[in-house]
Length: 282
Image 1 (cartoon, helix red, strand yellow):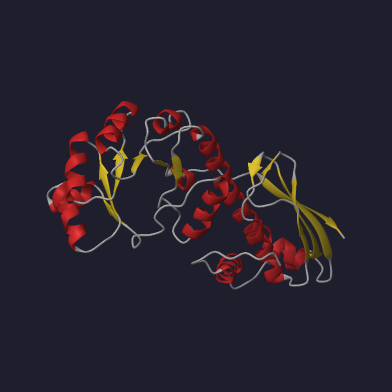
Image 2: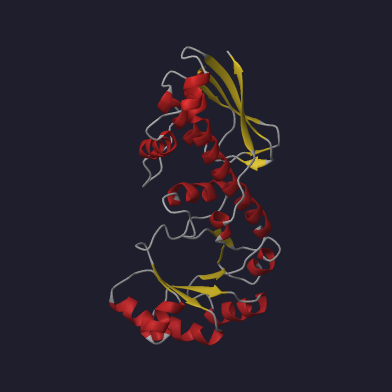
């Protein structure tokens, strides 16, 4: 089996839980009724779209969970850009097992490759600006580690895995604390090393920095406003543009001089890649 490990992700537990959701208490009643127990299939997984490949080792794990002796050849590397019609994986094994695992395997590869493909488009649109693309915490519950793997495979940099790894002071925190300065002071008093502060007005920049912010998130600002903020910051902390970033606008946003551009839609709105699995009797 292809080695595949991600910190914080239990591949086998994920496969077991996903298959259990699909099989329920009755199992794959269609395959058991229609497919002879000793039948064997050969199959080819292929992409019907031009994509960035992500998730094939996870798909392999689904098939092996139901047929440990299955023969699998992975034909494309993770992160590879492939044309429509490219074969991704070749399989040969027990027909029932392959059909039972098919949907879970395809769903995963389609979702992760869709994320990686959209991410690569944003990376390409940002190229030459000097800014780095970040992902966000806007992920499907339970799939964050996998989805952030997909953005990384597409060329983005992972940012904030969870609530624990950096303070992120947003408008609601400021509203409760009373001001940007007070919210930042409280984070500093709590001895938090990384303090990201969201600002949506230029007059919040200096108070946030003075109070101890270590990173500024410039929310929903125009390129002109971003340039003004970047000049005001003067390199004292990293700056991050966020909010409403699209493929049409990311180039101008990155060219405003920010350190980072974060895009929630990478994990929130990426369409699934069109990937299929075609079987033939062995």
